[in-house]
Length: 127
Image 1 (cartoon, helix red, strand yellow):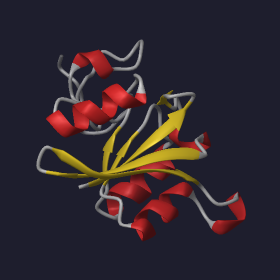
Image 2 (cartoon, one colour):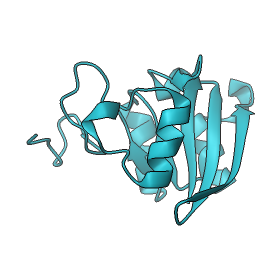
Image 3 (cartoon, helix red, strand yellow):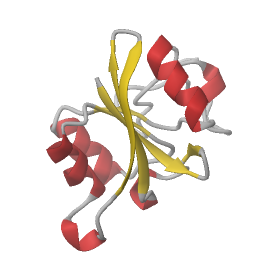
């Protein structure tokens, strides 16, 4: 599955909407078969969400994300793993091992290690 990780300074970027660099990994079973660093086109070329929809990305890993971007991605079938923190190398390894939902990768102040912990939405954390 093709996954884009918002990146900043070798870590997961704290905010999806302001991230300009992404690490895109393609994982088949438990193997990373392709990894590349991409820089988003200037903002005149559309939103980051539009870019990933057109690039065939199926999953986004990021820190915080605006409701507008989250809704657009979800409406287009892209899974979101928000409120993730950590070093890119460790996050890529967790994607490969399918352990990304571990509390270890929760942003400070976010008690929810599960994906799509939506603010005010129907999916609330009980952990």
